[in-house]
Length: 251
Image (cartoon, rainbow, N blue to C red):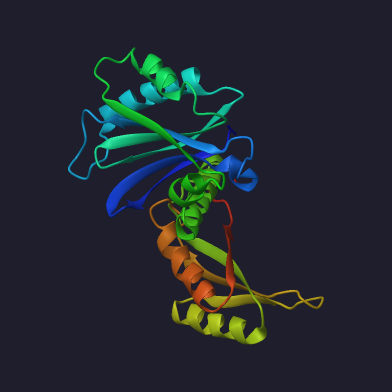
């Protein structure tokens, strides 16, 4: 396990889902020495109409999760994340061998007499469960990045309540694709700050655009995702955003 974990909301199998995943291992998977996907499914005692846990249930599941990690994670296994959805919580692991898995799970959860659970394993050498179910989609990954930047601004003393210029950068395979994006961005209320020309053959055509906005956790996705989609639809890639820090700790 890494120290880089994050959570996000999404929809899985047509139901609202809350996912908590180890993001730090993404570049290292699949891990050949752990070819088996293993899981523990725990029924929630208290779930809302949306099938997600309430605050008390979240606290209970975190206690269960901590016990599972202590009892099941070793040199021959790794805990990679959980999915809460549909009134249940699935804890996902990857392991070296199947032998003893069910017995180990039963031993750990025997400490929780009110815990109804199932567990199992399956071959997953390509780590499809991690990559396709636990890992965020490209759009959700963009949302996570937005949240992390807002967190960083807030930690620097920014109250995230004042309007200021927010600059966005995107890159494209050719000038025509960039020009198409600029038209889309202009229609959304952005102005071009800088165009970035390729210095060598094979380099990309970049552009920086800007508009006023409040980079709060509530607002930022609405400010960035239209540009993210516009860049993708024009054959390019949205690289992210930046702004100045405003607040008592700003330099």
